[in-house]
Amino acid sequence: MKEKAVSDAIIETVIDTTSSGHAIVCDDGLRRPPWAVDNALLREYYDTEWGMPVRDERGLFERVSLEAFQSGLSWLIVLQKREAFRKAFRNFEPDVVAKFGAREVERLLADSGIIRNRAKIDATINNAQAAIALRKDGGLVEFIWSFKPAITPAPRTVAEIPTTSDESIALSKALRKRGFKFVGPTTMFALMEAAGIVDTHLVDSHRRGSSGVWPR
Image (cartoon, rainbow, N blue to C red; front, side, top):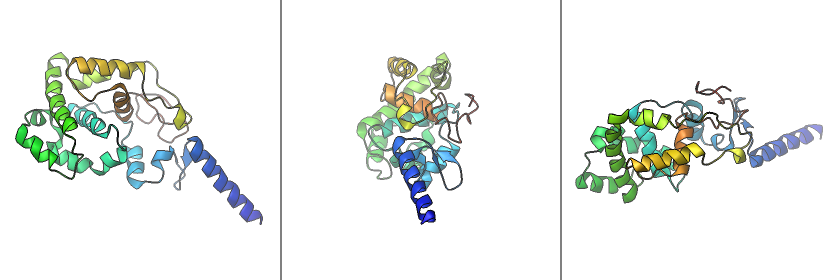
């Protein structure tokens, strides 16, 4: 009976922790946010990539593009289709994507491996052209990273993680002025999280402070 009571207490603790949005101790002893616990693909992405600095043009353009495709959908869907996206968009090389015309758009709309949304496809091509235009003023990386905030959030639960910030609102407005599309404040905050510009890892997660950009 004592063993059962202990087991029930552990189960209740896990349920309470999950529902409250705190970091969860996983089977490997590491703490992760609820969204990175059960799915292997999401866990790997969280452990190895999410929140790590992206400081190259191709990589950051890919992130801008994928965040746009994710808008209104699950990030897991995007991850599952990521390699198909890379193939379809020629590894997100801005110089290549910027030259896509009507034939390429029709090819993309017929590609079941990606999210077939004409507006988002058109926006990706448009944004490649806008990224190239930014080179004369320092480039996409310098432009986006210039909106890095002075401080970063320190959430203890998922509910405490913001979805926008003054900086993401300003970045959204600045990118729109430069001709970018599908770069709303929420999408740009997600980009800033994913690219290490802000650190929204839960404070007791094993990844907190791992980017080297922000202290733990």
